[in-house]
Every structure is written in C-alpha cells, then in structure tokens.
Length: 102
Image (cartoon, rainbow, N blue to C red):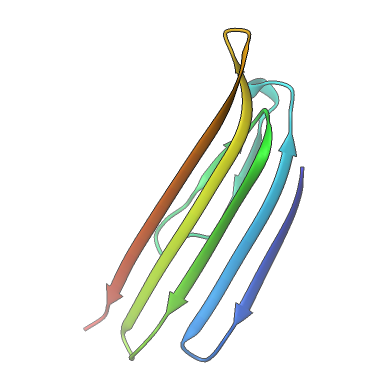
C-alpha cells in the first residue's frame, strides 16, 4: 500500500483534507485496515483488499462562531475476485454534516 495525505488550512474558516491510496493484497484475510479523517464524530476504519485505489476529499467550513459545516466525498475502485471471476467494484459516498453550538 502506498498513500499520500494532504491537508490545507485555506483560511481561518476553511480546512481541506485529501487522500490517495493505492493498495494490492492477495485476499481479504490479509486486508489493510486504514483510518481516515471524517466528519466530526465519524470514525471510519476502512478495510482494503484486492487491488485498487481509495480516495477522499474532506472540507470543513466554519462560517460563524459555533457553526461548522463538514462534507466528505470518498471513492473506492477495487478489482476483486468473486467465485473465480474478476469483477470491478466502485463505491462512492457523500457525507454532509452541520454542527451548531448554542
């Protein structure tokens, strides 16, 4: 597995995180469990097996004191073998969260 994480503090109110991971394992039994950044309160422990690419983009914006909007887009493209046949799996997910403090 090879991965690159990048984080930018674009301004006082905006933070962006990116990840690109390329992986190749032989079976699910030797999978790689990876931790990713997520929206607040989320704890993704993503298992990677087969061969493929995992990416995500996370943006956190705080427009005013006590408010934070978080959005994450993740994508997994994996070649897998099921029942002796090669298949390609594509999973995409979008998560949006708005936190307010009073």
